Length: 201
Image (tube, rainbow, N blue to C red):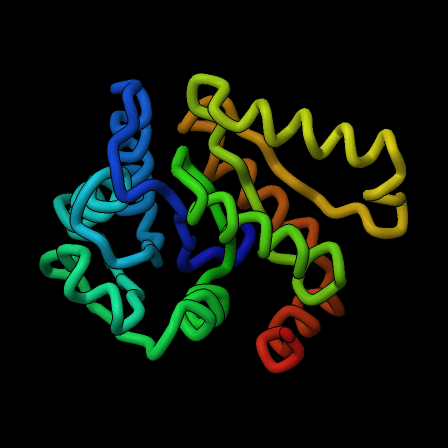
């Protein structure tokens, strides 16, 4: 089994309009706790973020919220979670990267998109081999997948710049897919991954 101790989950601070989104967040949080996998997330107590964190906590799991100082007065911080306050967004994203063994994007907005695309960029540039997965609940990420295919077709994502991106349509498939991807990482790549935070620009 791949060594996945903590998963960073990116998702919306709102619930969205489809009840399936919140349901997926709750189910995935329960799966994390039941498998003794810690959650690293953006620290908020509302929307999708609050739902996934509450689900982990309610099952006795470990939750670490990472939030920049300027958001403390704008967002409710998750209850009963270990909270790390950073000086800015850049430090927040770096800390999330360092603490996580894999990355999952549930439905969300511009912030969620920016965070998961940054992980794709770092993987594309060879800075890490940690699994990256889009939780395609209700086809939410289909437009992004189509855009990535479009970029590949036009040779903007060239073969030498390609990266592994996992897409799961069902919540139950997320963890098995992440573990399989982690198992496929070579020892050399695992060592590269451990050094990656110091190389990120």
